[in-house]
Image (cartoon, rainbow, N blue to C red):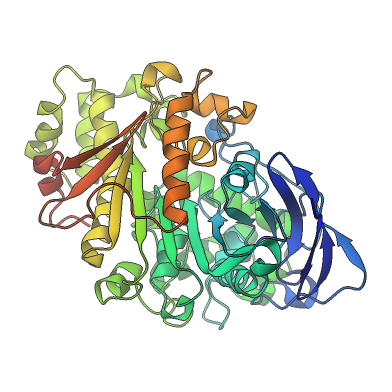
Length: 491
């Protein structure tokens, strides 16, 4: 098996993987430090000779997840300056015309990397897909918004990585005309945002968005609110130069503390709508890099030619209620207060309860929060596109299999990548993951990335077809119509 490939910047050596060759830690942009600190991505300087690409490269500066979520989302921290790098798994670098998956990791735009074990692309390579996972700048380094002409650096990094793929993926057997951009959580929000940008036309032919949609971008005013609170926490002026002068570790810590505050004990008087969305760092509608709100752009037909597979998990919100230990304290009063915060009246909350006879207040709150954060935003994207969009709901595992989490946020990822046997996956999906579900889910993703339409009808507002994915795929039309109507006029 050939272990070498030649990119535009130079020759690289990979290593054998379980299904082909892996090329790891390839820089797609220059180091974002020194004169490039908090500036748009710059091109890579070419190298002489052969560069080893046999180990994961540096990760971008980032903090840790809030404590309740660390057991479920293990982090990778590799020091080094060339952190804008990517990884490629290919069945054979001498092949040609293979479909390509470009994966954007999640982590609330604050955590994560392309080096997480659950994103190992070997199973995709095994099944004929070239898999690419990327890093991009996070938190203040990637999404600090100031009125200074350098917005959305993390988003610009993602675009730079997609340009790298267009220019280089043929050297790994991939077809630049057959690229699917995909991601989960913040990665899915990124994929939908990229889909809504006219500037990305031609950079990918298909898109997949898992548990993320178009509802988590910030307005310019919200972006300035976040940068102001960050500057206050640092004790500096709210300017890029002043914030960049802060020692990197201190800046990372301060940004991480803001995220923890917003995700665990947000003050609506301080944070406004961000207290509900819980994403203080995210793409900002700057009317430049991101010209308009993604949902508005999609309504005007931007990206309409790109087939989109988009969906959410049945029990998304159970993670955010069980991991922090609040599940047992949820009573009818807490349910009523939380539902009111999401904009529901008592009568609308009663619809959710009536559809779940015998369910606990926690079960009902989980269903409402899952729809507010994930289910309804996913369907709003599908409604805006008027076709060429397939919606799914992932329904595995059952709560008894994984400590009550069920098909919670992130649970589908090991099944998509067929990494269910990774020890890091077990806290999230349980100790006995279903091989049938992995085969079904991974196979669907491979088929879609390879150019096939999913085996169910596209989503149209007239019938709202959704596929339920577990050990098989069931097509359902207009599920829970009374609950869907609850959200008309909300958000």
